[in-house]
Amino acid sequence: MKLSIVVPTYNERENLPLLIKKINDVLKEIDFELIVVDDDSPDKTWELAQQMAKEYPFTKVIRRINERDLATAVLEGFRNSKGDILAVMDADLQHPPEKLMGMFEKIIKGADIVIGSRYVEGGEIEEWDVVRKFYSKFATLLAHIFLPRSRIIKDPMSGFFMLKRKVIENVELNPIGYKILLEILAKGKYNSIEEVPIRFRKREKGKSSLNLANQIKYLRHLLRLSWETKEIHRMLKFAFVGLTGVFVNLGILWTLTDIAGIYYLLSAIFSIEASIISNFLLNDIWTFKDRKEKGAKEWFKRLAKFNLISLPAFPMQLSVMGLLKELFGVYYLMAALVGILIVFIWNFVANSLWTWRKVQ
Ligand code: GDD
Ligand code: MN
Image (tube, protein in one colour):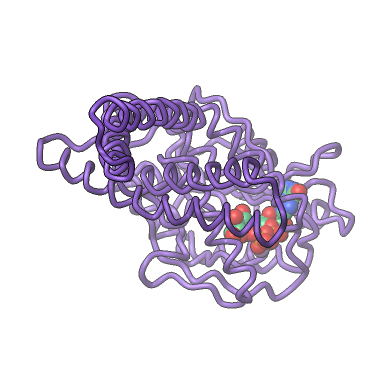
């Protein structure tokens, strides 16, 4: 079994030689190739790589002239590779090459994908400040919300991973930005997947190319994946169910108050609960029909969770409304609309991550 390691580079002249040497040291026992995909770096990384290839013949160099994107560079590397097993890692030595062998063995033993993970037990980040850590965690949370398939992974944003080629064979990948792994997790064909802890090292030389443009690319990428995997459609269904709930709520309120003559605040308690239950039933048989654990007990658990999540909705709606109107002078109907939107987001995210968490 041949291993192809794809290393995207942009201005990594100072790091690449050490990486190649280390890889040479740690992979003595296996058949592998190293594919450097350079986007015409101003520091001529490609040229240096070509020189090194003479001493380290496992090295192949691809120089792309008109493109500058990490994820598509990786795909270009895949296309030009020969291995049955593919790996991706950064050139800046933030990913420890010593882990490659262990990851390779896990693939041989049957894993389809192995991820070098900063967020499993034993994983670590050496250098980042609080802000960058927060961004990373927040980006991961977004992935877990909009791409449920990524939930089983603690670090779906990792740039260090290995996979069998068959995972992406005949799969159309079109990522943008940095998060090629996310694309593979969303569309790939795999059953068993493992995370191994890594220590994400300090970048000694050169600097990270991650910038605002790349963060925006990430959001665009995530939304597109969410659309392609129909997760956005789920959100629309959820909103539609919520709308039916309004009618159930008002209808029962009116019936109990005007027809049955019950005091309106007491009627409201019943009508609110009735709409919560009808929303739950619709979401359970329609919106989240693919994400349920079987059995009556599980059904009751979901109902309880759904109710619990609905509880804070009431004070949330009121405080957002009050705040916007009293403090910022927003027209009360507008304020109510914003409140509804925020409650909607709360309801969807909380229920998706908790009530119907299960993803097969
Ligand atoms: N070919 C090519 N084109 N390579 C690039 C480009 C590009 O436009 N931009 C960056 N690279 C290369 C770098 O030379 C390096 O080898 C690797 O991609 C990672 O780039 P960094 O700029 O060092 O990224 P980072 O350290 O901020 O981000 C890393 O960690 C993230 C985890 O939060 C990457 O591994 C990300 O993929 C990962 O998500
Ligand atoms: Mn880096």
